[in-house]
Amino acid sequence: MSRRVVITGGASGIGARMAERFAESGDRVAICDADAAAVARFSNVNPGIRAAVTDVRDEAAMDAFLAGIEAQWGGADVVCANAGTGGPAGRIETLALQDWRDCISVNLDGAYLVCRWAARVMRGQGAGLIVLTSSTSGQWGHPNRSPYAAAKWGIIGLMKTLAMELGPAGVRVNAICPGAVEGERMERMLANQAAASGKDAETIRRDYAVGTSMKTWVTADDVADTVLWLASPAAGKISGQAIAIDGHTETNSA
Image (cartoon, rainbow, N blue to C red; front, side):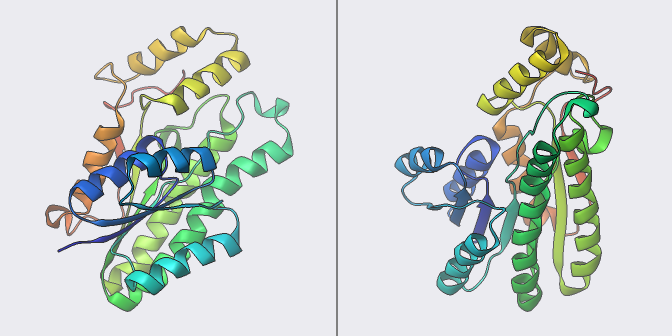
């Protein structure tokens, strides 16, 4: 049976790969993303996936995007609160308040707005799955990345609370915690961290891998595999869990 899947931050990176993999499984998929150029590129490659340019921090815009999905599909079976930003890099005493607020807002306000809608429609359905994208930084912390780490720890707290609130209604809620994921986003973050730390980007790249037991980065498909498993009957009793996809992080000092 075709599932109804909604993914925020779905036009690039792991969000795009999750959307493509659900669509390949025969599911109906809708994504939103604040990056208009990324949405256009995604739509050209994936014309069968519903895509909208929407800033997850904008309550009115998110309400309109989600209302359109509800009107057409009647609800959702899987909601992935994936939109996020890496935020600024640097010691906390060097960071501007607005940069802190921007990072927290995209990562946490965006998750709140889509989860608020998902909780209502899924409670009414008596079933559903919400997957929030956190990070290994949300389990370990991360030097020179305090806004991002704080937001991603908050995502896990939100997930745990929603699992408690929605479990009696038959709704499961989990978080995924990717490590260093190959792709353009991490390349930008490497450059930012290099500028903030004085290390060169290739040293930081190696540090990410060396800090894992498996000495590896992960791919968007590794993350998508986990999300599709969580949406399968095999994971029907998995809820309230923060699942790392990272090769087992031992230290997060990159």
